[in-house]
Length: 192
Image 1 (cartoon, rainbow, N blue to C red):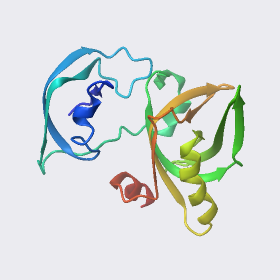
Image 2: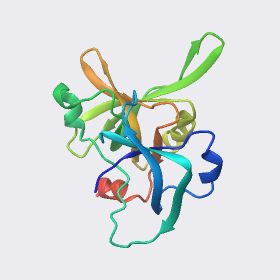
Image 3: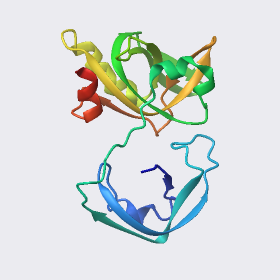
């Protein structure tokens, strides 16, 4: 299988808001196919789908369909600059081995919060991950309460960022999702 980005514009969102849910399988017809020239891409596919008012969506069930929503990037690839496309959003899994205090960032009248965490993969490679806004709230509780248990995170759609010659990843507006100590197969496999 392959991955392709789908876009639902704000004027047609009302037709699909209650029809499409994460981690489910759908059959879809009647959409516009165009170039994937987004500034930040969730897939490497050259094309993207745009939903219209006439797009047909029906939930289906196929036990043979492989439901892997992640395209996990090994940390060692982030250390090799030739394998990093800064316009592609990445998925990563790792254990939080250390973290900094929450910081406040002011830009004009706006105030945001961020936290830097260091992730370690199963090969002992490490990368820094910067989380912003609501993701800080989601992870902070787990960091404060988990002295006895490792914090395993799966991040979806993180932006690679080069700083002082090294790559790190950071959350990307409303696109990044986080699963903490989840029962996702990727999280369970990482623990073992």
